[in-house]
Length: 319
Image (cartoon, rainbow, N blue to C red; front, side):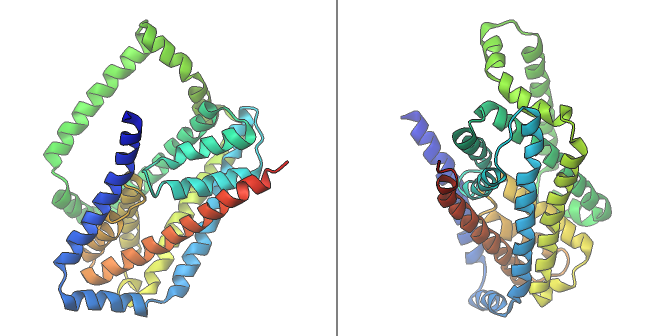
């Protein structure tokens, strides 16, 4: 019974948090502000939203194509379409439980390409590590060029002293774990190492494969599409059309954090985007409407592509 309860809570708690944030923010606005926000939805130029969705498709395709390099190095050559379907399904699954889509990607290839789950999942983990480094680059660019805005936002929303304590504790625990993992001869540790051998092989494939630069080029292109699709949406509303590129990068970074640590940003994404844009003199109602327009459009795309992929997978793999 424990697993179903745990799974149920992992799905419902993030959604409940998102609903709470939406209701909480909604109750903060007056009737006039809510009417103003509705006006932004009605007046938005959705041509730019459609353009952002078109750009997003290239990110999906590039992510699927990039996956072939570590898999080929492990001796597997799955169909491009199966990889693309798996990526689309992963984005949709992430709407329910944060980061659960990575598991679904490996499950799809295990079922339709007979690629061992641990090795497939290992390549995905390695991809995410590379993605994390690229995201860190965006973060530091925003931090360096928008230092005043970013520092004001962080000190307003995050207690720095508690964050430093948590970071120190995390580093100490990580160091202890690594020492135990490397040097321990306990049976349970040795058994865990054996179980994770395939995962480790998948992760190492990124660093030992012959097409590292092609893999890196796709990784950079994927994040370029993320930024580009966010950038073009600012022109959908007059209130956001003239914000600086630095503001775009800062909002993009904060929005990416919201997506990464929640179920694809449900509830949190529009609120955090509005908070950032408010620092650049964009009215809160306009910033919130903008955040919802971006989030809703991307969510519709994820559901549509994920649903189509679910339908096409068994048809495409019919023997």
